[in-house]
Length: 424
Image (cartoon, rainbow, N blue to C red; front, side, top):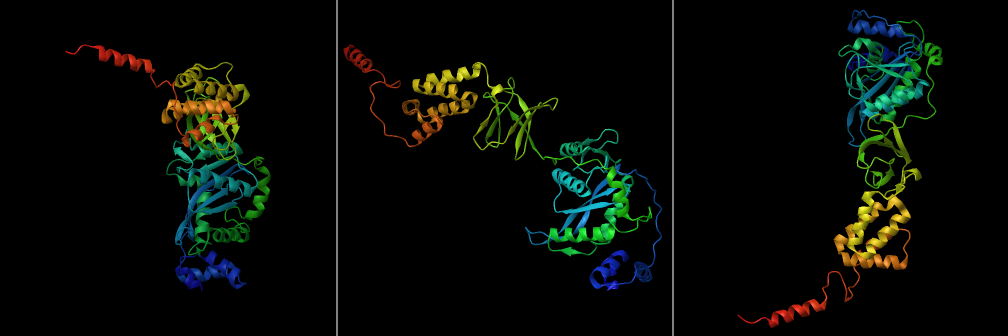
């Protein structure tokens, strides 16, 4: 069995742990190690510098390659990525497996690791991968926005390493190699949950109970001493917002996923940064990042406008829109004024919809539909009533007076004038 495991590239520690877990082996690790050395020889160790870290001061993070796991979408085995966070003082590690990598995934893995540890260190040492660092600079690195906000939420500070200087985070590098060479070497799993459970079991039974070669103390004992020095976890977890730029339309609202949210007065026509998640929408100042407004999420087509954001008087752009409605037809203008008086800026887009209906179906038909809405007294949504009225295309009625019908006297005078002219 040992020779077969060595052929797969597994080391003596992994072979001994598997013998104990799966086959009830009662011998010690040193006996297995001596036997393995006889089979493959002993390599001379390299010298390593030791960095002493105060408790709760530093954690190091990195990605490494994980085991082969069957992808549920394709049914094929694929290589996973292993996120590792290692504490600088106690060498306690949290190892998490994932199929995908992105800036949000990188931040979510940090949050899961913080929750597992029960606290946060004051600094996080990482290399210059794109998920965390956009522009490497030893003096002033540019961090990914989501990652920077996550660390600020938990009170930690990122310390990226110098480019091509991985020795600064040698503890997490060793933790990555330890997991790759010991529990995961030559392993395949049918699901990500199975692989994570196997890794957690190894972490609990072997990695946490081992005597560390540098400190000569048990990792779990040192972690228990270090844990009181962590920064406390916030009550609310970090909220992962989607981000974008939106223009404030002249109804005073911006649009997010077909719902409309009011901005403060004075921002019409300007583009502002917007953040949103499944719970709320946040409008930010484009220069300072100050929170301008925060609204709860609304269903599609709904508006959210604070009372203090309603204009005191009719804005010039709105007055121009109402005059255009009056020019399109008297009933269109009357219904537009009624909608604006009842709903305020929320009705601006619906008034624009009336003009669009007049352009699509003709001003005369739209004016008839608005007259019907005024006669019936539709209060909930007059625009929707007018739109459905026009979509049904009611039968035309003969009318004697209409803006597009000339008076019959004009035709009579024209005929008389033509018939009385002398022939040439």
